[in-house]
Image (cartoon, rainbow, N blue to C red; front, side, top):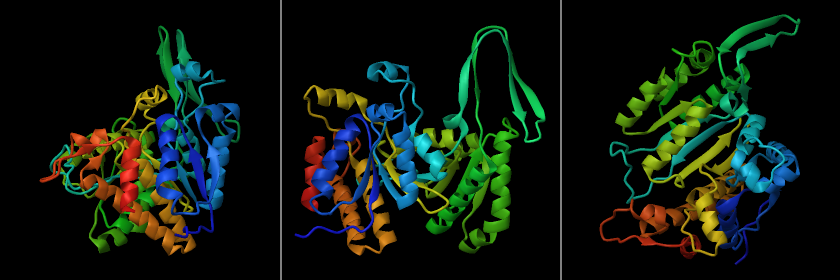
Length: 399
């Protein structure tokens, strides 16, 4: 059988720990036997990031801007324990945060629905898509420790005029943090959300806490409202879909009572937290797609979960693991599908569709990793726990 040809490479960003192992198995078992894979490879494993002073992360993001499509493995964002474990030069920032800042996009995350896995919230009948702003806030913040004294936030404009705001008068030791965002990035976020809602014909809900953060969050609310009124209101009304703004706590309550079928736009930190909550409520963190879409039409696909450290330590001891690779498979299929779409490569698009279908059918026929076994309930089928490699080979049989 001749392999499917590619004309333009995908930017391939390798990662860490158990997901790095899965990454290689997915390529060997599910992709390379069928596709003459062309990638521009970047090793974003923590060791290589440390060796290059994190330059490789910036290089991978710039390559994504060049080629238009990337696929990324899960990576470690180091804390102090990781600095010591890997003997790092410093506590490097989140590679996802770096890439998202350079691409200036919005992350859209949606659950992969399986017949036989019922969401923990039984009213949810349709997918809930998280639209996560992918720039600024905590992920580009600066922070530090304080002693007794006064912390101030100052700003100096281009004319040299300086303004200062008192943050807190510390009577003892503490911590302080400053974060930022830009109107340009918020505008890109808003347009990405409105365009995605129109494309999917789904209502869009946006929420912040502008009653508390009157200026910072209030600016998000104001920009969304202006762009909606000026550019999207007529289009939304024509399709019969709504745009709604409300407070973040109100949306959480509404989401729980809803049947789904909603795009929920969130600021960066809110989206990070809520996407994991939704993924778990729909079944598993490993059962969610994630794609970063930039305003210039650049796409980066990734798994929305971590590096599965506990399984990696077991793997290093030679023990068998049953780690769920579905989100990573769908990161690859999303990237291959988009590459095929941009290049007019129907064969590549068709292969990606078949791989997704084979993955879903494997689970629906009772073959799955351990995290899904207790969730799966389907008449006439007894779920069977497979190791990660066995699961990938079961998918391959259906290809």
